[in-house]
Length: 327
Image (tube, rainbow, N blue to C red; front, side, top):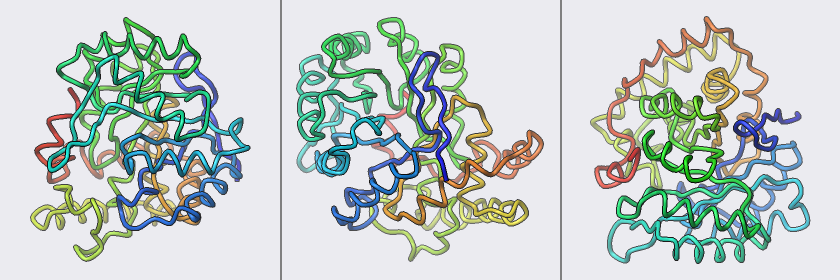
């Protein structure tokens, strides 16, 4: 299987339409084995997928270290994305820091952990409401000028902030949660990104696993998933019923539920780049197979109607997390 590629944004490089979100390689959804993670990344690259997405927050540096070891000697095969901006606060939730000094320091630390001289796509992971986005993107622009970063992105930024950032330096990609379960904010964001020629990178494209057909009881919910309102007992049955609608359609189409959901995202436009996460090579191959599931416009519309926008029960994050997204 050969990965399909498209230009990232109006003038960006060719990037695999389906990438690998690497967060789960740092113990977020259960224990991860570093050697197995490196082997998985090798397998991903062998399939022609070049888009690897990390963050300095995933395992607080661990994720970047694993990726750095895995891509050693294969840097030219990788479109490497990472993020900065979240900071650890002992005994509490994550903080954010979008100050120019932090931008510079965080990039240096990520480059060292990754073992590379540049990061292809560097995102502000979470908006810092206390620092004007113009200042943050100005500092990110200096990284581009220094050759440490190639393209710039923002994660979970609302449309007005995207416009302000883009006026300082071209933004190549916006990353926001986007799936059949949660898409209202993503679709509002895409109105702006499409206008400005910015790529849309869809994280959690399978609803954090809910849409994959593998989470059927509360006992299947583990790791950090248990913190997300969509999996709480009062919301689980409702959301599981929505996922089963997708599974029914997938059987009709002759593919897996995960493939159907990813194919639906790809059908939204060439600007959409899903980055499902997994620790399994077989699951990755299943996800990549979505690129061969061709949906007609009528089928895509039927799937959209199967789970209407806003139908999911529970917010995307717990209350504290919701304060830091789409702002």
